[in-house]
Image 1 (cartoon, rainbow, N blue to C red):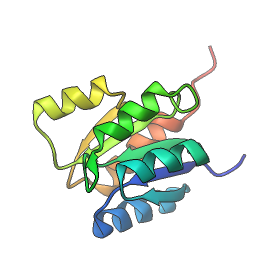
Image 2 (image 1 turned 90 degrees about the vertical axis):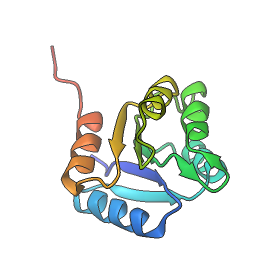
Image 3 (image 1 turned 90 degrees about the horizontal axis):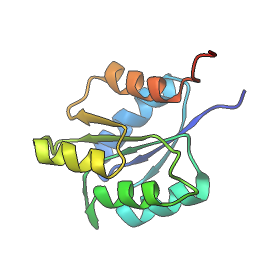
Image 4 (image 1 turned 30 degrees about the horizontal axis):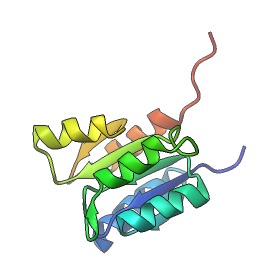
Length: 127
């Protein structure tokens, strides 16, 4: 079985480094993007197994990444995890409406982020 990939769309280098380290230690291959446009383009090009998205990005809100990927038949199947400091209820509701499968508040416990990715990427149990 090949190594699963996770795209992290995060503009803060420290957060990106932490998330990437956590996920690599969990056995994932990690790719990154730092803007909405780059995140959408990389996701469409690379078709990762999951995407971790921050909401506050330099070229707009990360909701754009969620909307674009959820509306594209080529990427609509990819699980989306929001990991952000934008923690108001309306942010969480908008993230869910935009296609987020999981909403994680920063700062995030390393094991919690890994658990979220693992849970989304585990195969469904046989019936």
